[in-house]
Amino acid sequence: MIKNKLLLCFLYTFTLLINAEYSAIPGELIAIKLKKSTENIISNELVVEDDLNKVIIIPIPYNNTNLSLDLYDIQINIQKKDFGESRITIDNLSQVDLNNEDAARAYKESRLIKDAVKTYSNNFKPLLDFISPVEGIISSRYGKKRFINNSPRSPHLALDIAAPEGSPIIAPAYGKVILTGNFFYGGNYIILDHGYGLLSSYSHLSEILVNKGDIVKQSDLIGKVGSTGRVTGPHLHWTVYLNEIRINPESLLKDNYLSTLLESI
Ligand SMILES: [Zn+2]
Image (cartoon, rainbow, N blue to C red):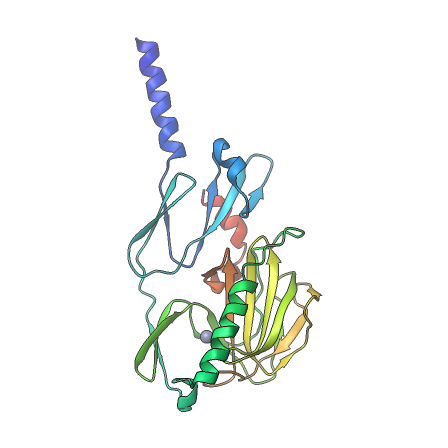
């Protein structure tokens, strides 16, 4: 009997451990230690391994209400976060209320970007410790509720860094150039593939200094800050995606981000 009780107690503790709930902030990444039984069903996920553990890195989507995600039998409670708001004025009204031609162009480009960020390459593993792509002043943070000429728009799921026209933009980490072009909203635009579903994009450049297919190392020059596309002044609009989810680029700039993430589990 005592033996059974002990066994029950052990089972209960074990269940608690493997079904632990996680709490996360929208736009951040979280690290989850894998249960043995889920190891085989991981397909296109970013997995970090060391001698002892296999850990999966999951992007937490933007949201401004309490929400929970169920992934691999793990419940992730996403905390409600108020990111504040940002109000901008665009004087050129043709960039706000698009004519049919521009609307069709913008739609076509948005499909192109959506498809590009689905790219999943596994011939190189990403580095989660990024360096800043440009030296400048943060002018709009991730998650801000956007108002253009006082009407509400989609939230700002990127980081804006203001810098003088022509300032160098460098690759924040090793990657491959998978898309370049001139887009209605983004102006001169680049997407880098960092591997395993991690990608980053660069908008409003005055110059693009790389070509599709190029491999760039961390700190290689990729372009210059500009004010092409829909902008209010020269800045870099920098977006980071993991598994097609836009995450907070600032997190990846924290010192030893990956080790901190792994220590948190
Ligand atoms: Zn922006």
